Image 1 (cartoon, rainbow, N blue to C red):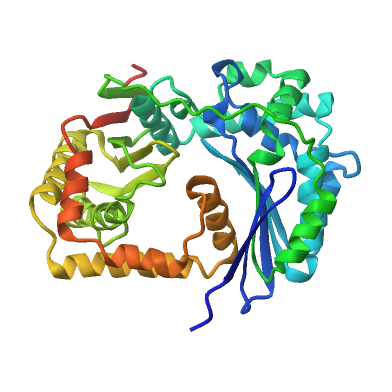
Image 2 (spheres, rainbow, N blue to C red):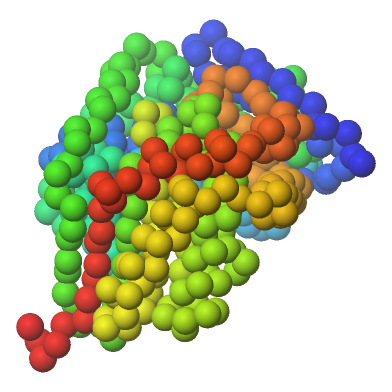
Length: 415
């Protein structure tokens, strides 16, 4: 067994949190700049601006052209990318440990000195509009977005990360700079790194290269999403297959019941051996794709079950899904199934954390959502401690009669 990675944390004078895990068995490093800002932080009229800023960070700084940003990490065999979510935006790189200073320099330059040139904003607006079109042409993406909106309504968690055509088309350079100035500030930034990383050197590099203005910035206010009464949403589109999402609000990232939920979700819809896959696909041939999913946020979560199937099979599938949910509420798991689910969950978690990128991702999220570090052993202990009674209790809390359903159906004869 390799030793547990060595965790360290430093908070700079400006408020940036720097967290790292040193792994003695690897030759690579992953580093990311994680901002506590996502689409839920945006006013409706600026929907999608966080994602738009993510694009603009790659479009040139005071000393780097877009080509240099794209080429500099790739030419040493590394990888540079970013993503925007509901609550975080991250810019990250993975490369050989000897090139970590280059990655830190590049990331710090991007988040500190992007120029947001007006001509680039106009050009990138067209790129994002094409991204929205691509999204709209992907039926399972459409039904997931409809389901998300159904569960959270007009709250920030219910609006699309990409924004809308109207909002993206309205962005000006002044909008972009004003939003960046208010939300991309040191106290809302976590620098996370994992792999062959020397923490003291990482801190020194960040303090040398990061040049975000030390301002108070806009305090983050996370308003709770109000209840949504609508139970169903149906959209019709020129497609062949029907797509279905059924579910409800889930658990927050820090919910104490999360380990029981993880095991329950594994039993229900994670992988080919799950109850939903075995019943709907293997035994009845109703769907090619069937799985459960969950997204955790600061104060809430999203739980759902997705299936792609023939339109005529939708009522039967809904009935079977409801039956499986009732079963997990009313019938305790056997010792064998409980152990199998725990082993599956622990194995997947442990194997996933052999990746330095996964380690870096986990480090940042733990600091943002939990404010503390949890070792892999502590997570495995949490999974081992789950009982069948706890699984039934969390299932009963979630899977009541208030489940919501979004369905994307094929259009027939254009209407």
